[in-house]
Image (cartoon, rainbow, N blue to C red; front, side, top):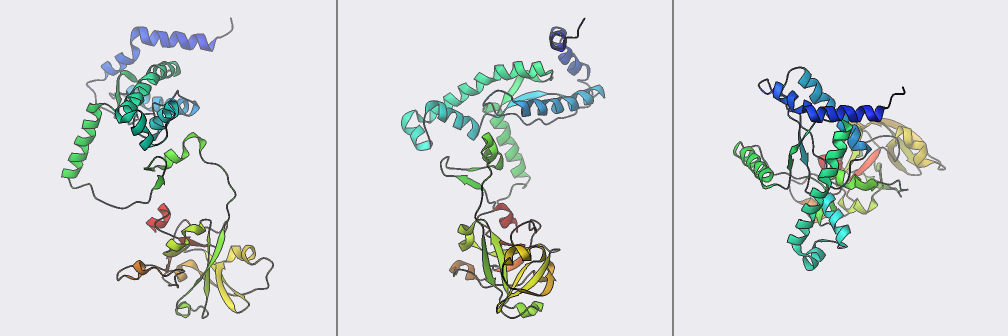
Length: 336
């Protein structure tokens, strides 16, 4: 008789449900040491896809293994109900765009109610799919980030952390969506296959060093920096080099240029030039250069700007090996 995997799986799942096998496994170890498995909740904005299924298999293996070792492992299911995914889904369904239009047409309360309804709509379908995968989780005791009890627990946690003086105010460069009128995360940027391959225009810019002779470089030496975002050049505050990258001193006509040794031919292809020396990025660190633009705010006392800094994100795969840095436009730039 041929083996029917589908029928066999359904029989096993039916056996688990009728005999409450999962519940018994929790009951058996409830007096034992707990093993806490943190499982980030999915967005409640659609049915599970291959990525969810793959992640669920891995997330199911660990709690099962720890249960077999004698630990008490809770597997409480959860739903991420907040944020742009559900809001954008409802905007599309209601054919509205942006906060102002929402307020004018259906109002904040009506919009929020639509979001809540949509979240609950997918919950039942998810339960059926996850059970069919054979994953053991506590669906009947699931939490939702939109529940008052959940939000109160978050406020309690924040208050506790605040009392322990573990919260501080800082600065971070984030992407911003003018349509949504909110900062957005990298994950939100990557949703719905929003990344695409494009051909970028790049620019190579001359930065004249102030005192190159202090590093045994010719007078008037110029650092050639590369960027794919020339519109950020007015915000330039530093140049980044790789400490272990070898740089060539290239003479073209009457000017000496600094370029990564491995990129000389790319930069000066078709030109008559002469390599007059070499240095390493670590030897360039600290050199100051003349700013491209006159920005009064950067002349204030205590402001450190217009110098060469070491960075681990600089490579010799493209460009010049020297990267234009504008702290207000990039996360790496700001950290530098």
